[in-house]
Image (cartoon, rainbow, N blue to C red; front, top):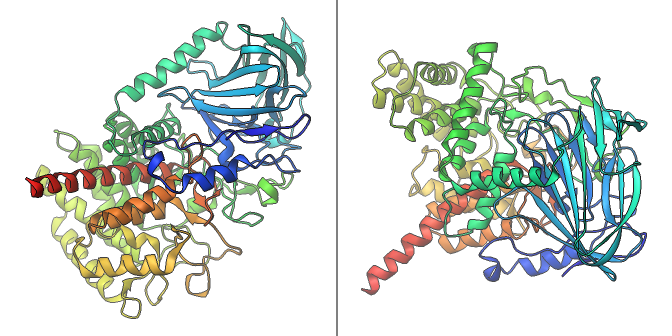
Length: 634
């Protein structure tokens, strides 16, 4: 089914079809795809978050809607001020639209195989055109667009309306040496090639093409066809080295390409998402800037990359952490940094932007950088341990010192309250998951000392504190009333992070307390087959008003927990419920409404990390069950 656009009407979404091999077996795809294909941009010019395609050059990102409009672009880095931000304000944010002019049309799209190069096909009464979009992968930074007529003839329009500095500047175009030029920010300029004015109509006939580029600081690539070939080669060569499961292989590959696209190549840092302030609650205040790198991401990112056999990216991420330690000192590590290692992430609001569907405030920076989050020690220690397990070499001295620092900090700090994995703003508490991850930090240091015979680790202390954490968590983190491990000491509120207790090794999967905790979370935290991180209310006050969507990562944690409990069919149902909500391009934001609409920043690294890990867990479980069935039959 295609989106049909009337003349002069706001353009709408593309064909929605399942992006993975299980599409024929997934009962959720039909309802979701029909609902999406019926929607257009609303009267204010906003379109659904899932309607965007993601472009990357591993330095910055752009989002392109299925009507051919680029609504988000930040240069020169992921976290730089925006050039286009119509996703946050269609009137003030700026955009670049290339689409059929004054014609009723439909659109469909796809990524070119094994790439982050996007192809959108427009069909109208007079003909068919394909618009191919990519970010140049060479030294210069350029957004490139190639329009090709493949049938009949089509009159097109290109309107390039940049608004640098988060829409605070309306630049004037001027002509220099045949290029259109305007000011960007920080003294740089934008150079538009391929058209003689900012708004231009043109007609193409079958077999004809027209190329466009917008470049930062200098003209774009002189040979647009060569640039396209380079981008295709760059991504497809990277993807050719991936190890993929048999189950949901296309989704896993798309998730891996997305994670690669979210890694800032100059440093190795991975941003949590490509955007800022896409809301967790439409019209609410839960809008955050995710264009930074959390240390927490390390463990899960490295685990996912290890699953697909991409060790180089994991190594560069750890090298980024090492550079931060060198710059700031281990004793002063924050829970997150700018992608260049910046510590100052002052949180500001941009009151001139209306926010996606009037969800305010629009924020840049992130005040959570100053929080205490004790779970970070465990996640960073686990990341180092996982990287060690993937290597034949002992830990080098720098990573060994970093691991010892994680353990020392966990041993010294685990008795303190903190703001926890969810970065609550309602005051520090004794979060169960934070304590468990301090246990993980000590446990991984003990394992590494044993494996690599590191004599200078304070193993005796690590063991004493590890045992003390276990005793306290089992006593104070368990609720007899709920028959589950709970969010925080003294509370009966449940938290989806408890789904990880077996995955991190704190509990064995066959521990009855784990099965009981999973059952309690299924009973109390699921909506529409998806999972809340916790239920907002008096028992789980996070200091913010309003509601929020279900979290994709939490549902995929449930999938992994069910796999570990041997509930393979139920795990598969949960996995396919989440993936049924992925966009037609296989992309996921941070959150989902119970009826499957995407909320939050997009695309979200955590969602794609957990998708990869869950898909491999399911793939292995299905193969084990198949082998067992064959053996029984024989």
